[in-house]
Amino acid sequence: MNDLPARRMLAIIETQSEIASAGLALDEVMALVVSRAQTITGAAAAVVELIEGEEMVYHAVSGSAEGFGGVRLAVQASLSGRCLLQGEVLYCQDAEADPRVDLEATRRVGARSMLCVPLTHGERAIGVLKVYDPRADAFDDDDVTTLRLLSRIIAAAMVHAEDFELKHHESSHDALTGLPNRRAFNARMALEVSRVARYGGELTVCMADLDGFKQINDVLGHAAGDRVLCAVASVFQRLRDTDQVFRFGGDEFAVIFSGVNPAGAGVAMRRVQEAMAADPACCGVGLSWGLAALAGEDPDTMMLRADAALYEAKRRRGQHAGARPRA
Image 1: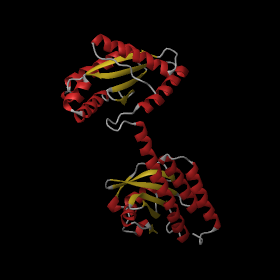
Image 2 (image 1 turned 30 degrees about the vertical axis):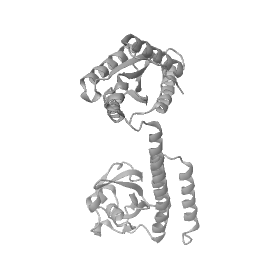
Image 3 (image 1 turned 90 degrees about the vertical axis):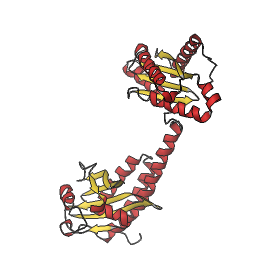
């Protein structure tokens, strides 16, 4: 690293600082990386390619590579694929005379010379950072050293970003059913109420729980109860994409119906109820629900009205309706 010119040393340090301060969204990290790699090396283009099955896919692009996002190259027939499999820097000085490259693909993107650096973290192969140029022999030893150093920074940032996104998903989703959880519900409700307050429109919230679920646990055991909850979650997920389903815990679920009034939400919930009755995996459990339309109040008040409607529905159906504490 000490052999690099001072301007390159500074550029690498600045890139590391920018990555650290840019947040942990993986797409932002990759976009920043390709832009800096292109600038530092003076290349016409820079790309981050990630491996997907038997293909290398352009996930982030810069310079003349813009417009080629999503391009797929066979791992075995591309220089970037070979770079990843061999775990070493590969330099193609002239694609027209190099048998390692996919010549048709290089001509399509305008890559006469290419420099590929593997992105690895520990034993994990992540992808490839590649710079290319329409001129033959466009890169030198300083470019190789620069990309090697950048690749270590990039790979670590990408792994940390993926870990962050995984932890964020785990914190906002129910581990059993995969549905968004109560924390995600509270955040989404705040956004939807704010949206309606600003732009207008309908908003209905549904609080629901299962009838007869306790007997499933008592008679068949908790493993059977878990299977029923997963089956019910699967039925809920058949709602339209804009209807957002959440699991609160236990046998409690919630649905946010954006742009729908209570009558429309009731139709959707009756379809869920009918689908549960027809699905043997639901083991005959029933469904009770309560609906509340937004009436200018805060999300908590709206939820309390939906809860009260649920309580009344269970009372009418002769189901137990104990008080449910809220955080």
